[in-house]
Amino acid sequence: DVKVTQSSRYLVKRTGEKVFLECVQDMDHENMFWYRQDPGLGLRLIYFSYDVKMKEKGDIPEGYSVSREKKERFSLILESASTNQTSMYLCASSLTRQGKPQHFGDGTRLSIL
Amino acid sequence: ILNVEQSPQSLHVQEGDSTNFTCSFPSSNFYALHWYRWETAKSPEALFVMTLNGDEKKKGRISATLNTKEGYSYLYIKGSQPEDSATYLCAFLVIQGAQKLVFGQGTRLTINP
Image (tube, rainbow over all chains, first blue to last red; front, side):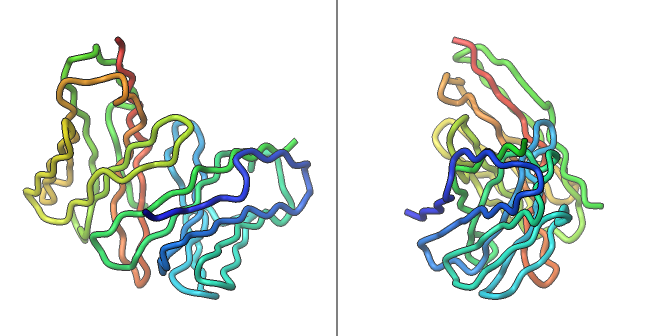
């Protein structure tokens, strides 16, 4: 079974802090994704990566950056956290083959005070 | 802007009743449509990946159909049970070099015992 592990279930940080959210997958998937989920808005893609050191902006990249130094690990960085980044963050991974689903972590509920 | 719409946004169904809901997506540049179930306090779980027009997929009491020419998919649940309570997400696969999913806002299903 694919396991996608996010470093924290709940996180509370202060405005202006630099915040790191970590995600690790154990199935050698090429693709990794970071989403945020807000009520009534579904999952919105922040950034994704299709290979080590490769990254692509998603639909809402402003205020975020990412790092993929190893295939199994994809980090989301909030450079200077703001209250409008309070949200549920989900990491996912997948194979590149078209008919394969994404596998999700349990999510990190991040509160910025 | 690519739009994936799900309706209804929320649904209350009596235990034992059958129900269905809709996902609408662009009818051009179709590669695949994904369905996920997201239960509270768990990670989203893949139900189906559908790639061919006219596809019908089934998993226990849940089934899905796909019409790529008119751009819609239906998810059916037969004989709803309390454990079916979840948010159901559909997602449209976009391939522009790399692959990414565009999610609908979800249908929140509550089964009343």
